[in-house]
Image (cartoon, rainbow over all chains, first blue to last red; front, top):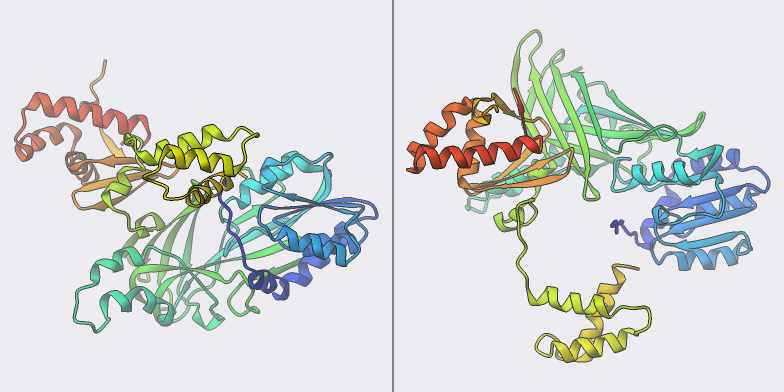
Length: 384
Length: 92
């Protein structure tokens, strides 16, 4: 089962209040909805898009959301007199088949970037299985852009704790991991040291691969110290309707992605920076890679870095080995507990009955039936 | 049948590695598969990255790990074949 990020009610409120994002989504939806049409709202959260679709005249809406926020959606559908038109599906869209294909599919399950968790596979699946011929996808496409950025303040979080902490202890070992982690930022246009380069157009009507690889060349347009690459996306929800996360635009909930350099680099106008960006979806999360080569004007590369979020994970050798294909997992009591637990789930036994049997079979592991019940409930929730 | 020790092999650009202590884990970005390398595998990997010809790797391992040529060659063939079969190594 794929893991999905869940959001607090405050986060959902932030999405609703994020302008011009919300008004752009509303306008795209208003244009797409025709009287009586069918709409699927993927990652519906509390259902704001679903409610708007009803307001614009949709005949039926299927709101799909794995999180318990669907309960709020249910309440708000009632509050807005839409209960009879909104069908709520608690789960993943990839595990759901609608009774018929939809005229409109709307979603915003991006993270800081559209290359986030299962976003793209989910859109591909929805387009192939759920969208009627000639139907509308919202968003239609996102464009990824990258530029060279100077941000001493953001780079400090990669450097100061490890290299300049003033504690008199050698913490330098942490920095090689830290500089391989991305960070969400909201920088202004003054942070840019180069013009942006477009590195990808994610056309949701045609995209078929969740992975991404691109090369680009940036050119410094002023002197400064480069601390990282700044990546953001501009969205086209419908023709002429969209929003931008570019530095200098009103900050939206998405922010921008800051990919730090292995070490800060001084640049002068005309310096060229060759970059290779990759993002590979592995086990539900993206592994980002960013290779950079700095060239003085008219010179060969003076410095090159190869960085990856894979290198930002601190894992023990044992943990690393346990993910390799040669690893033979040792059998343990924990497995035995879960084996028994899963074998008792037959659609007839209650959690209480399963917990009692678990407690009886593993009295050393569970001091009480309540403790066993907690374990069984957690385990079964993974398969909900 | 050709001997893999005679082949010119180089690490794939799709392979990223993380070293912890004297061991290494390689992640193949396209397949999403992890490979664990023990100290000898880590040493072979380092030599491959440094451009040491495959044929010379066994000679160096014999000296460094105090094992016989036959044993080293058998281990190296298994190791290189597995990495090549999984596209971690490609023909250079």
